[in-house]
Length: 210
Image (cartoon, rainbow, N blue to C red; front, side, top):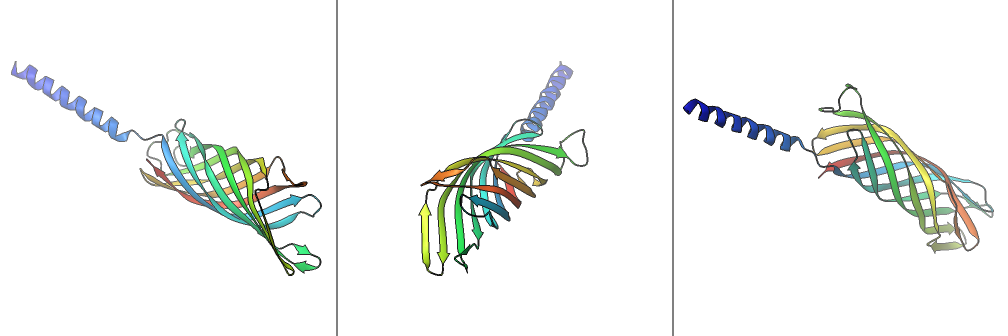
């Protein structure tokens, strides 16, 4: 009888420990991403030549895990386009401020062990998606004066990313890579049409798991 009770007790302790280990290893499917980006862009506007400039900004995203390697990211982004066009023979300063709503599918690929992603710390990442874009404000500074316009329309585009992810801990990771964007439609307002022809940027950011 004592042996039966001892055996039952040992079985319960083992099951309890196993359940606790399983609970500890269970990860939340939701994480938060904060990224910054720097790069180059080209915009086109009806009646003007294409304009090259610099972009800088960032995204605040929520990532939903869809499996061992797939995830869905969405949230909001903000970036500025700065350029120096020539108007009437004089240099001018143009700043466009954009708000973006991206939706992107990402995949993580194990670098050192292709058979399993458990206990991996470094991943190759690739993603693609679409976004809605709006030009919140356009500011133009010239030798004759300054002007600005707001809410210059919406459009849609396609984006892609390649990069790497480094896990610092179970709750934190670091990302960096290259991102490309291209508007698929034009923003239209007051008989003016414009779009971002392409963006090529370096991104880097932090990931925090809930």
